[in-house]
Image (cartoon, rainbow, N blue to C red):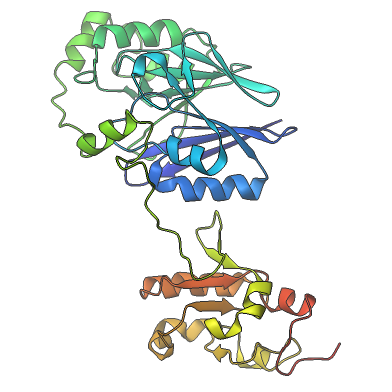
Length: 358
């Protein structure tokens, strides 16, 4: 069974794709974004997956790849087209190569035209293909820079993508209109740039008159991506909180383990967001915790001390997760959710004020 996730970066409108073999738990990521590496790592961790390789469809001009950063964190190899001219890659791909993840693989098809080094990755059973910027949904990548060629792109799409079965689902590297997936049959029929009976000369004329501005991040993205996303100084920016051993979740929250909190109780401020009857009820509460019910939190944030990091607590961790969102909106970024809430705290035998004795 294939594990598949389509992830999105809002700023660059980039799709990242996670594919994994359910039996071996080995995975690949296609077109990851540098700023989203923490999110992607959280998803891998929650699903219990081992990242085998990071694949880019081409050398991007609109965002920095997370390939180098993910390699530092997981040991995964970096794979990209041999023709892309990228430094730091472990696997330089050519037409017909295969990248395995467990018992599954993707096959490499060279689809130049947007850039010289554009690749399309086709899943082993041809049920899906990842087209990068060569083919977009009802569109295609521009051909006016980075060795672009409208004529080459036309032939790439016709011979390497449209030769797949009509039912093959196509997943692009970008979409700017909220569209997520298309198919070979759809694009053959409905793509306004080269669908139907549109000829090569029609397509070239269309592409040569787009008049598009250069991507906003091109001056930053291209040099970095030619280094596989490695920062110029060779060091990743340190954006991780260091006040506790926190775990980042795919839901976008920092979580803290009960054991650390029990051992470092005086180093943080505990905020309990349950109702008063729960605070004084059977589960009891953590000594020194401040009670502000979740429904009142947004209006009472100013009552919380700023001298220590915050740990939000509720019964099982759900309301306190929302409390972290509210606190973040109020500028309190030094806040974490107590994983499992008071239920886990009590189950692990840690002390409470009040509460039932069993």
